[in-house]
Image (cartoon, rainbow, N blue to C red; front, side, top):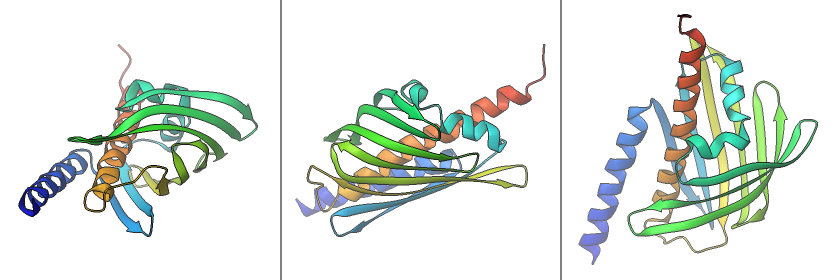
Length: 187
């Protein structure tokens, strides 16, 4: 039993490291009591405006973020949006449903903070920051997640890490894709 769990965890860690290496970003996750704390960062060859446009296209997230079935803006007032998302996350045999409504506050063009106001999490907060860097932009994310459901002790944190890597990686790739379209010569 222990050997099988160890082998599964080892395979998961190898898969997780290959996912993040392929897209030039890094995700870390750790337990803090019942919460999982997540940190992610990427350097992207794009301008801040393109990165901002992707991050704030909440109603288009389901088009490019894996396992997200729907994402819609329910309301908007100034720099605050109410966003509802549905999907699932997980790996191997461990999958968990995601349905969450966020209150999102934008600080254009460099910061976005969100907090879950209903859904499958007791608590879910996150902050994205953008900073200009030589030849591109640095994208940072930090989040705190406390799910309503039980995360298995051995693989729960790894499952969250893999889910965030898939989602964060998808955001990075979409920013890169849109940046490439902006600089492509007209034909």
